[in-house]
Amino acid sequence: MTTCMNRDLEWEQQAYGMTKDQLDRMVKQQAFPGQELMFAMGMLSDAQEILAPEWNPDGVEAHNANRARQMINCAKAIVFDLMDNKETA
View 1 (cartoon, rainbow, N blue to C red):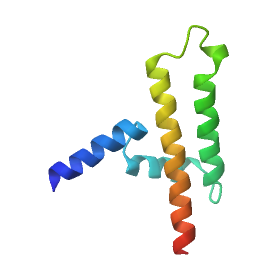
View 2: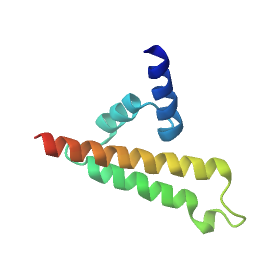
View 3: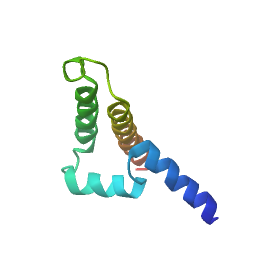
View 4: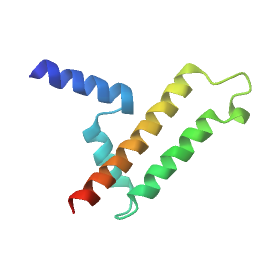
């Protein structure tokens, strides 16, 4: 069981740059109630900025591409959570 849990945490860490619990806490602390979707959209905008050609004239560096990927995954997780909550309400 612990090995499975460790694998899950490792997956979350590489996917989000943090654990899912940390992501959930961040959303609760930083997003205004009812504005979680806008918070996710802000994360997508930040990811776009990281990848923007004007900031990367020589191409996107691997660490920036990875950070953008993690931000996109975070935004998707927030949206999926909102969809799940809507379906169970």
